[in-house]
Length: 143
Image 1 (cartoon, one colour):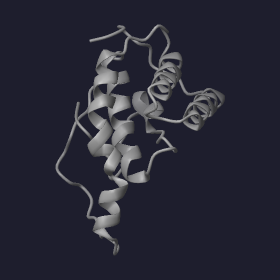
Image 2 (cartoon, one colour):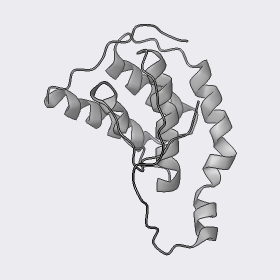
Image 3 (tube, rainbow, N blue to C red):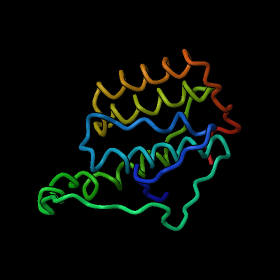
């Protein structure tokens, strides 16, 4: 698994469902963890993640490096546990929306995410359905 963030990130239609950022972890953590979660679900869809040379210029605002480091502590302390949980997880559900919800519940049970994220992903999935998004169909349960 490779971490990726929300900066200059492109999701094609079949991976649109993977854009949701968890809300109960700091913003400096949310996009990285979202990337790990999306990758795990991509395995079941035979989707791949690609990296490119930079195609945007970033102009950083002033920020406190020590505060950034403090906010990123879950990345250093829990990412190994998260990746292990994702690698060992086998979905019971056969649809992608069901697998997404199931994964969020699993991560809530492991105390990686909070219950608000479970409700958020349920609302996100309902919104995608309401606008007619066609979820890709999983082709396997686990790699």
